[in-house]
Image (cartoon, rainbow, N blue to C red; front, side, top):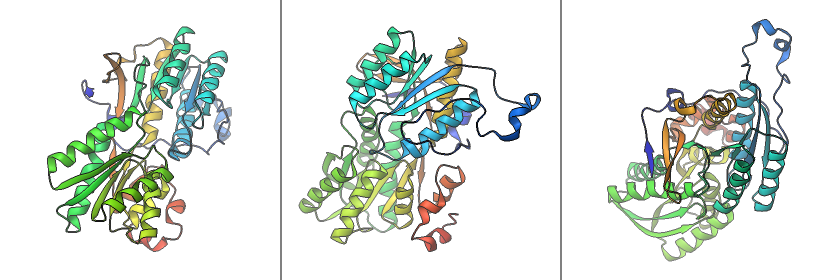
Length: 377
């Protein structure tokens, strides 16, 4: 259960405007310094870069469950660390617990002072956290909490709110098209991901409180588009009268929509998503998705960088980590920074582009007229 202490940081409530540089190739390192900063590097009198120096390691989980890790999180983290004057090593475990462990060892051996990790599962996450703590390295859980892991801090979004937005978004979209009742189903994230549990908590409660729709099927899609598509096939075979699906992210929604197209029901059975990927935003514009949850990862990245700076400088991060999230395995509240998610419909797709977190060309390929209609450019 998420418990908020005090007001959230104002900068985490608004849509982030943090600029970021070019994407780094998967598995590459990001070094802090003056690369790409143009003529300003020679004019130290005008430099606004902080004096803090230090090294931070980041382990991203994969690039299959969602493209966001490489298209959003990596560049945003690189930009945040560079702006903070920190050297960073950003690597992707590509879904392999063995690789995750190797990257953890490597970063500790290379002398990082702060390790930021998005676990693949609680066991691999905890193993890395234990190693880091034994080496005197502070740990920040990034985006998902490692239950029982004992990280020092947690940076994410209000994930119960994410799920609530999905549930309410589906209800609103169905009622807007005149569907006031009917059967719906859930395709959840991976059972090993604590975030998936929180998302479901949010949308399940909203659907229950509304009372208009009946949940007739409920299964994990394991954050995998192909798996989610197969799950939908099973649902649809048993319940051809489905009117909607709460689908936990854009990647799985894409897999479901592909199967819906084969069945000729795309747009007739609405789905939800999250992450505001180019594919997801295109599906929203085409009316296949009721909407997607925009989690501006520049906010997460800046919060992680701010925490890392405070830790490295020996300052109290209490003014940054103004919330707590309960680790039910350890029975402790983890100091946290929780940003506010935003529900995106066709009318607001342009806001994601304006925030610098999506590329209009990627969204609009093949649907240029829809992009013109909705002001996406």
